[in-house]
Amino acid sequence: MTFRAGWNFLMTPGPTNIPDRVLRAMAQPALEYAGPDFMELSIGVHEDLKKIFQTKAEVFIYAANGHGAWEAALSNTLSPGDLVLVPETGQFSNSWSLMAESLGLKSQYMPGDWRSGVDPSAVERSLLDDKDHKIKAVLMVHTDTATSVTSNVPAVRKAIDSANHPALFMVDTIASLVTTEFRMDDWGVDVTIAACQKGLMMAPGLSFTAANDKAREIGKSTIIPRNYWNWQTRRGAIHYSWYCGTGPINSILGLREALDMIFEETLEGAYARHQRLADAVRAAVGVWGSDGPFELNSLKEEERANGVTTILIDDSINVDDLQVLCRDKFNVSLGHGLGKLNGKSFRIGHMGHANEPMVLGALGSIEVAFNRLGYQHGKGGVPAAIESLSKA
Ligand SMILES: Cc1ncc(COP(=O)(O)O)c(C=O)c1O
Image (cartoon, rainbow, N blue to C red):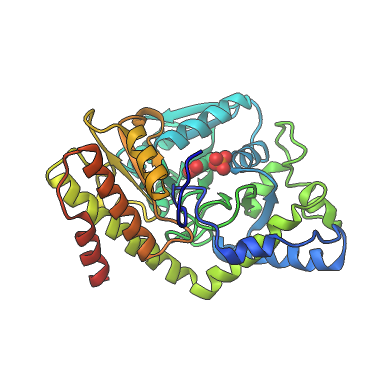
């Protein structure tokens, strides 16, 4: 067995480092599932999640990963045979689109290049072409974790409005929430999808949908079979039904603590911290790429994600070797490339419970790994990151 000294720096783009405060909050005896303590906790968490989504819409909590929330969003609003429009952003738009098809929906998939965000004008054209309003929903991934590209949500809303199209607008914020601005109501999002294990700093296992009146009203007459996910039977007078059974009590205790931490920092503070860390990582990658095969995947500066950086490489770099060395020697966990970027990229997560020393430590460890593995790279990524953080 490999002994790894020191703290683990979980620099993967989910799950992310879990704060001790959150771990301690979870390490408590369970509460009575129908007792007043859990009820009060649960009401508070549902209300406070609305502040994170910046919405007045109803929030639903699932004891599930992000895939569960994807399925909840689709199965609550659509009927078999309905068409959804899915702009390709990367691996996660692919997977969501495939899930839609597996539920009996049809997906109109709009090809993308995995390096740029959703093109609002292309969305508008597709919706204008859809004279009979066969498209029932637009499914958009805010930050695609495979590509580290963040797309412009208000611009896509504007495109839907310009086409005067009634499709529901659903946005996956699994990798963007808390790392970058997201305003569900102001931006006209009908359904928000999220999960707890990234910006929300929680142990994996909870996911969320927020659904506005329009989405919930449409859902009353749609017929994809659903039970556990069903918005219509959750949030009733009986608290037990809010979770379709026994609530994930200890996860909710952890989430309460994580939300408290976010409110202590403020959402704006969290967005700014993520931006600072992202800028530092990008500064280092710029230097590595000045004399080596390293390039930011996200082409446009304004679309570069705050929570994750995908770095393109060539055949001279072996991602497995890099990951293993960083993991075993320095206790730093990195993300590998996903989908068609598998073997062609690696990813540094800088979301959730992350700060400057963690990012500098991770970048330094990667540079040491480059040296030991003999990978050609521009020297001085860490000083460039220090410079970036010094200016911030
Ligand atoms: C943007 C995005 N959407 C969806 C998912 C799927 O979430 P989960 O793995 O929790 O099911 C992920 C996971 O990384 C993601 O990053």
